[in-house]
Length: 371
Image (cartoon, rainbow, N blue to C red; front, side, top):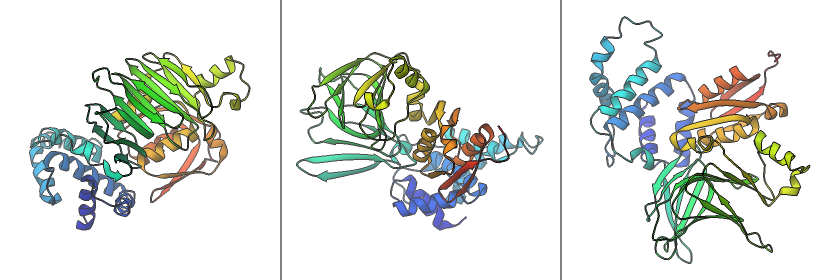
């Protein structure tokens, strides 16, 4: 294995790699299944043996070290079939070993993807970003825990937890808010502010999308709509409720349930509900929050919307050649699969074919499939 690649991978895990270096890793990762296997093994070993402040990492010795710890387990499997001794099994054993071997440094996984920078404007601004293909978990000065999804940015100024508890968000985040002497916690987005005391909720507000979605897990919150030249309106959410603010511009993806709700209200054109809030009751909150636990859940998901989520999740670009594919719907759960694994599942489920070149995935209709 090229020592240069190992060096780049370690820099990436430590959050010190540049965008160009990260792209080099992604390109190498997608070249072959063998590269993916090596990456997975090194990742397991890193989690089991790496120290937070170390600058070097002997991948070969570490691999030998961890494999030695599971030698007894592997001896018992020598009579099993080749399939059961496959790469997936070896990786699974390594994952189990990694949990118990040496010491697992708490926080190394959550911190390695976090990009932080302080920018001096009128006051000091702390900006925390989760790049495409990664997620971040942070704890704010008031104790509030925040999970940032891929392609998201959270900002707050030096007055946070002193005079106020205000943050601004672009993208998607899950908040587990700590109660603080009756002081409100506020998440500000363009046209919308979410106000809470202590609660857990998910907010999705990507700039290019035509909606801002708030899903309440526990507690209560207020979604405040404050558009220029209009009176401020408030919508109160209870647990398992979801509020969707339809913006004036952007690509809009609504579920079948939400579309039916609009039709029930005899709304013929979506333009008539722009800059308004649609309230859904008794939603399955896990569908909207599972991403923070490294899972993606799709319920009758529009394929165009699915592709955008996969782009962010894996840091890839997806080109859909046939517009008809965008109308397909997909059900499924993604847990730790590679992007190639996911594409294989989708190809098996829907009449599509795909190709992957570096970090670009091209999808088209499978002309050989008549379904």
